[in-house]
Image (cartoon, rainbow, N blue to C red; front, side, top):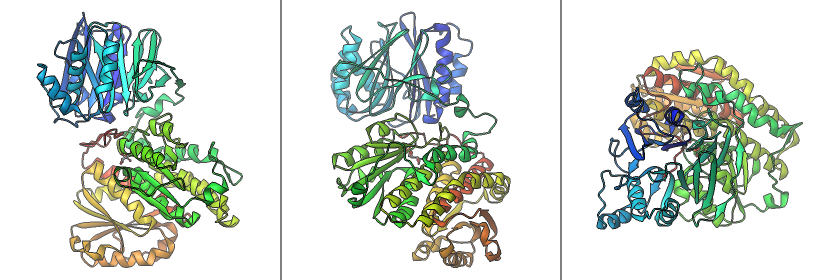
Length: 610
Ligand code: F6R
């Protein structure tokens, strides 16, 4: 959600680095792009609505626009529409200070009123321009002191990159509730919203902690808290393969990430399973603590919430304690009944989702122990949780999540089994059988992926459909929610996920001969029930695409127009397989419709505003 990049170093390298860095962060927002250059003690700004290419074309051949100090931005609009004037960076009235920002300044209206009284005029509708003018109004020749003062006045969330014409050798940054990393180079240093932006230059990074200011020079970095006290810089080494953040030969990141699932699932599962024993890193839930638990509360947003919806079914079955699943944006604003006898599990790919982070803080305030399932190492959610389990999915660049969803789900299975076993709620045979089945997931997904061309054929048949329902019961219904979201977000086809038995309580009136119903029926004991529901919609004219397990082949009659088979696996694990053809179907449908798959309209990855 908005991407920031900044560079201080050598003039010939600055612009190429900035453009490359912004390109890597395009997934965070693509409504507009802009850069600010400190050139001969003057700040020059180039910013435009639209993709980065517009800026690249403007800069092309303009050798005079070089600088050793630059900041840049990719915007995901919150305050003010997509326009050149609302694009970042913003320049202060004196022309001396320029700012790029990710987050939301919640008190910007009041600040704007005060600044207007002082004679400041505003060109844009953004909250960020208020930051630039606030810094200008506070500036007394000492930029660090100015930033310190401003951070005390700003409410809300912000990651800021700041340059000042009087400080040609310094790049400033500040962070509160929005991610910001520092990359350490050789006689050059960088700031960015996320690691892929700096990966071509360095593997040494430092994540700014909450309420910190960074002062970067060519060969020296200092970090302070908002009170001006010096803070320790914790440097970590990124061990990803650079290819992990590249598209390689795939058309889109999304398909690359779908195809990576067997590998990343192996990386997430196998280190935690040995001789039928589950070892969840350093997590230690003793039996006494688990016995005293009244409930488990899973809190997340979007697809991560859908992982929770699947997990509720199997966790209750395995652990025999109530499991609640809640959207983080709801949890944080009601009065959740959570206390020290509640285990709160926060699921998040980015580890920076504003609502999930706020829910985490709320849960801790209420006395709950918080375990997070996170993909990005060292992210805010990981840092603030009592315990963290990482999904080893590697960088996920496509806005629509696929491999993060699958790895989150796999960890939820391990957590559920671990608790179930510790509490003695599962027989040895059942436990071993499920473990064996979990170990078979990557291989079975490989088998599904090998048949992707047949799913592409099905997508070709249906990509022009404008009304789609996904139906299923229990675990299949939970997968339908994710399947429907995936399709909507990248293909812009309106679809709905419905519990198969619920359709007839009203919504069936929408079914007609222009409707495609995608029915998931992988649960043995519910198969016939779902088939009855399929008959209900079939008789109202709907076309049927059925997703079921290979062992049901001889049970399928003429009822379905098309069938996708997935390998057989234990019932409770079937979501980890059935979601994969749904990801592929969404991908190919969107591709046939000519959609911008990795960067769907209005979206951005990592939602750091509430
Ligand atoms: C959908 C998608 C989103 C995220 C949601 C939470 O494809 O990716 O719905 O799942 O924004 O993000 P994280 O997992 O980063 O907290």
